[in-house]
Length: 343
Image (tube, rainbow, N blue to C red):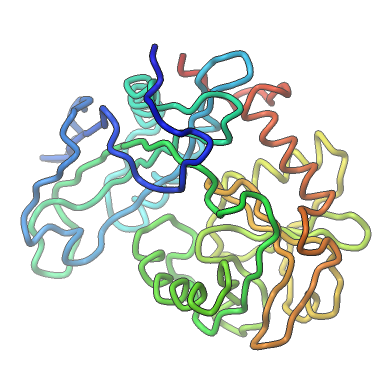
């Protein structure tokens, strides 16, 4: 196996066309056998369901080269389950969860030369997605669907890696009460694009969205869940029915309790608690960034500063980050079922 000639240590979080992708079609009420193909282009009707009514769901996970040279994925079964839940919410046929995991295996193995080497700081990002492809002019679900997986090598999601970032409280709502905030649908991310472009133009790395009902509670950002550490060293995770159930967040919850012996509480967190200085550390967590520490939150000009500061990740977030990435990279023993070995 010969790795591609890339500057692995300086990759951005960007798309590269790799060798193979997995494709399966849902037609006449059933999924076909699926196959790996070389063509990265998709041809569809101008009236395809995804183009007219945004019927699309997706996932994101990574493959890693471990310390002992194996290529592995992290908890793909949870991605399979979450994608099935997302599909059902949008009246799409769920792709079988066992086939999802096997399709991930096949796609990563077929692109093994694109998996960054251990120690490079880069990973292979895996993007499974599914969309309505048959023509739909009336407002209704499509009849036919395409499930695909492509992979691309990526560097850190946030430039500068784990250096603390500054985020702002957004005036926009991320999701409606009893809406689709708890699923990974493309439409949720489309509505966040204006807000994130505006945030970047104003010098902020991300938006923090408040609950749409009362606008008093912390929810999540446009692309990640939020974590807090209070003054007693408790990991506090905001809860809400419109927060996406992040696999990274769930894994960090387990790591905090079972590896680090921390107390973990999942509960509603108010903006006032944050403003009153009840928390000493804050961070974003998700597949792309793992953990990205927050140094400041800007609430319409008022700065909320965390004691962990703007120079480096706080000590608790650092322990969480080091432990989870240690498990992913094979430096620490993983809980049973967390690591899916590809080759």
